[in-house]
Image (cartoon, rainbow, N blue to C red; front, side):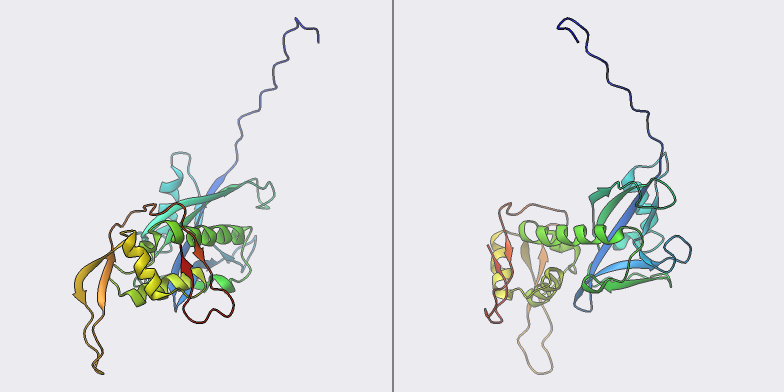
Length: 248
């Protein structure tokens, strides 16, 4: 091509026409373990494997509206305390039936909420997930990583905790979510310093053994807030004893 020749116009790419689905990684602390909600498929492909709640997106739907609609079939939507998009997978052969794009969402259910589930649906500890359909395990991994990261620098714990709780209850929830023990004293100090928590002014009832009532706290906001963009939750070092992780 000479210096005065016009550049060759790029070949136009035809507008693609293939399905798009949405999937929800619903996480909650169940039996003191971070758990994910899965349902068992009864039809091929991937018959008998466990899958994330979700389904197709209509041409007239936004992604968030679609996942909310599909979640309603598996879990009470009002039970979802937090919902955010975490990943899109576009591998060409991820579904043997057709080329299907998939967008995954992280959804959180508080520990004190017990949604009524269909017979084909149950909670699994994230450390003991059965063989999943398609590439759903990738969405679970990225959602768990997102939650654990945000526990360090946001107030996302509100999506897992009851409205009111003791510091020890919150420590138990955060420890389960992270997969290792957190110091209750350190957790309370840091969260109060960042103004993530506030006292309710109430306390638990005294036990029959005469134990001292524990103060009740709540999150200052029920919407996501970045409290410290540089904060890191550090797992405990080997041999560090029972004090738990350090929050910087």
